[in-house]
Image 1: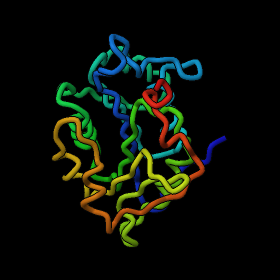
Image 2 (image 1 turned 60 degrees about the vertical axis):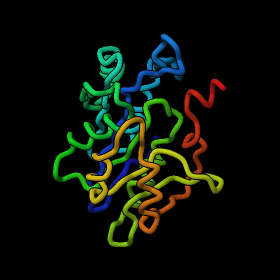
Image 3 (image 1 turned 180 degrees about the horizontal axis):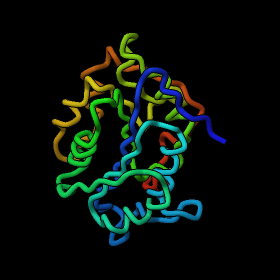
Length: 198
């Protein structure tokens, strides 16, 4: 049984980005690929739910009906990104817009990374502390950074301003003074379907 996030005094949400076109997978939507007997995106949503964060929101786009059906057996919420053709940034924007004012931080989870442990999300949520300059929390394993990354509320406007197929890497560079690296025993933070298939 995984530990669940207490989040201390903070409310942390998780966005599962599941709106991509899966261009490298050809006609097949990789988010629906079987991983351990369930669609990959369902495994990611279930992992985020198991971490015990305040809200889990799956942002669908391409093949939305199938993606939303795949996560229906979890307690994750679904929102649709009608601008998914614009790339990853549009899903981040829609996800941030869906968060209520009580959310202090957000974990940006990639829908094709089902091997991340729920305990990693717990560790990131528990490390978040803006008073200690832990505004962006990033998992590290064997000295290398991975995903997901937690961004504090102060960075929501910058996340909402991203464009194209851009994620949060640029924000990490621009805000290096408030990035806190969280050591985890989880090689899943590097592993996605493209890595496994290559």
